[in-house]
Length: 358
Image 1 (cartoon, rainbow, N blue to C red):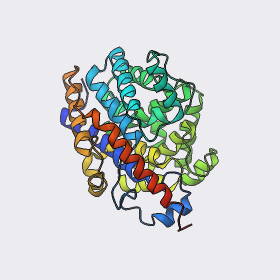
Image 2: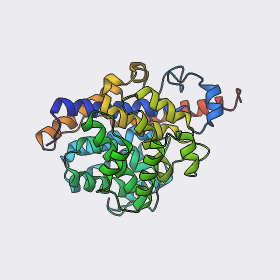
Image 3: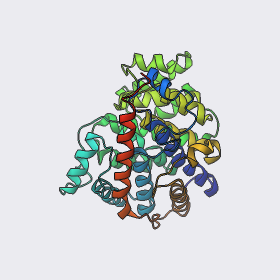
Image 4: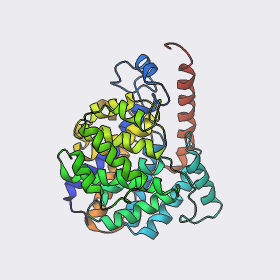
């Protein structure tokens, strides 16, 4: 049972999922653009840029929603969670998603070939596990042993590199702090909170401490990520994504708009970094703290903002009651058609990028 009151937990989970979706959709149009060219295409960055002021979600939000659904269906039991999440990944892959990381692609193929969830992951330190970690940290923030067990399962089902698991855990723990503290967490405080749970002197731990030191010294995020070797922009490598997200989050913990705009302006894997950061800030500010036009401008279906809110409510009920519940129903048969439409829109957007302004 969650330590947060049911209404508080629902608000935090709704903020996490909607914050993930809004950041994902806003950042998607900017993915891969250099910071300089991004400014030319989107000088204001005050609305979605994928389709005439409208936006769609990518695999970042889809994975967060699938993980949340598996938490509902399993009630937090690790074995049941692994089985349910594995089948959701199989179904998601069978619907031919337009965007998929290489490690996740290989893991989904291995799942379809009969590999168990414990053996399906591949050796990769990509940022995939981090993009679905915030909702786990909010839902199970009161049970750290269970949180770490579920994070291990969720990470290793696709990514078996220890850095991927540790990076996802750092994001989950930050989301836990965002949801429960309801105030700004200091950089030194973050280090103290994460210290008992991360592997000492490991790569992620060293980057967490370096991030905190950089924030304390008031170094800009752009200078910091350049110093970590992530240039130009923030790459999809876990050791680049996590410190960039935490650096911006520590300075924008209650400022959804400012934080998401800043991390998108850094360039690189902008849909994923904005999705992860959006989930962290959303855990604190809830739906009310996210610009309404960034939520209303998402035209996706069936994983619409309304569906995400329903998933958040069901997961809050599951945690408050301490048991598994039926997940929120979704029209799975329409996912291939949705993915085809999404692919055509993304391709059209890509061709548009071939034209000025340069």
